[in-house]
Image 1 (spheres, helix red, strand yellow):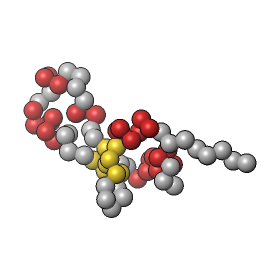
Image 2 (image 1 turned 180 degrees about the horizontal axis):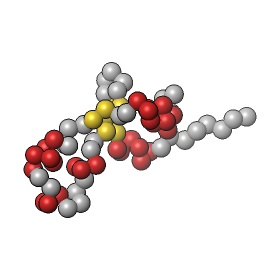
Image 3 (image 1 turned 60 degrees about the horizontal axis):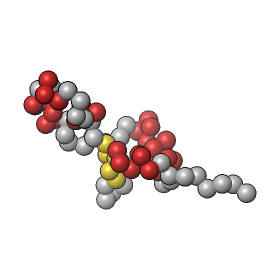
Image 4 (image 1 turned 180 degrees about the vertical axis):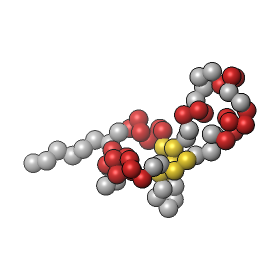
Length: 67
């Protein structure tokens, strides 16, 4: 009997699934480390969510239990 695969809960904190099913992530630059040295325009630009690359989409969906 095959065991049921557990969902990676830490991944749910890092991504957002849209209503249409796209998987979005925030940019690494948005994180708090040494933010004051980064330009304000770069911080604003990277605050917007980005769609996950298609090359790792299959892996991400499998980790979320959506495959």
